[in-house]
Amino acid sequence: MKMIVTMLLMMVLFLGGVLIGIDKASEGVVQTRGYSTTSEAVNATADDEGVLEINVMGENFQQIDLEKKQEQYEAVQSSHLTQKVAGNLESGVKWFYNQMIHSAYQLVQVLF
Image (cartoon, rainbow, N blue to C red; front, side):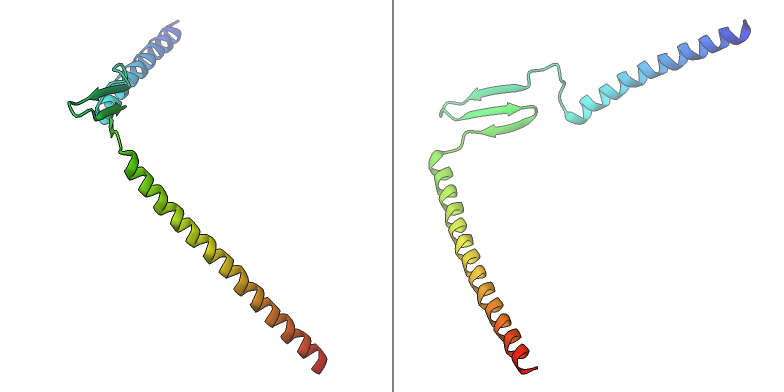
């Protein structure tokens, strides 16, 4: 009977320690993040100039001008065109090199 009581007491103490540890870990996570999960995940505010500022889980985002995004997109597209031209040039050079190697191989086959 003494052994059973001791085992039950140890189990209660162990489970109590686990629950306290989980609570402390949760507090540590909140301190690390800098915000609590009970607050709103998304907050949006607009200033006097009409610029929207959105706070999503601790990170700030601002409204971006469409013209700036269009310029960035055109810059990416122009670099994409450059990549296509470079890829075509690469395949042309590979074809020419393979033809030279194939011709040299056939010449060596004829001579030896």
